[in-house]
Amino acid sequence: MVSTLDPAEIAKFSALAAEWWNPSGPFGALHRLNPVRLAYIREQAQTHYVSARGAKPLAGLNVLDLGCGGGLVSVPLARMGAAVTAVDASAEAIGAAGAYAAQAGLDIAFRNTTAEALVEEGAQFDLVTALEIVEHVADVKAFLAAAQALVKPGGLLILSTINRTPKARALAITGAERILKWAPEGAHDYDKLVTPNEIRVGAPALSWNEPTGVTFNPLGKGWSLSSDIDVNYMMAGRRSA
Image (tube, rainbow, N blue to C red; front, side, top):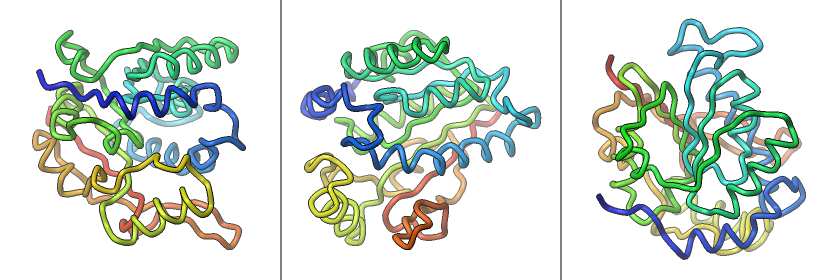
């Protein structure tokens, strides 16, 4: 099986592992983005799973968080009632995530492994999330093939990433990294960004929603879901039962 591991990307984020839960640190933009990402996940789960309602909308669901980093999404998914498995190729990130979850009293299965390794184990989940990870893997097609294989029949895959457009180059790389310092400089390689159509082609076994944009309003409103997919976007794909 083709490996999705990119050693340079892993090293880049491993070096920052101690900063994952610092909202003023290099991952501060993800902290600010998180409420919008989680709202989208909750909305998609409620649309797909009739039982996904109330304070614990993911109760009874087995959820996989691919490329979990320090657990910024894994932790709230567990708080929404999911039985969460969270994996990352960086042992340092997994260590930071596990330490935070333990301190918070949450039972999350953190593993230092890859999507393709889980496929070889025959693992499948009701809901798979892959947020801000497809642009960091060595082989996007192999990663998407593994991600769709990890979705149970009748299950759901949710991704978020940055589109490969001139606008994304200007705002998400030049603006966010080099000028505003919202992310570590060099965090994203323009040529590795992924378009919505490439996601559809890479995971053809899933029925994909139209992408939803995630945009930033600098006049105090922050991040919100929108129709503008030129920079950040999210997509949900459903596997036939």
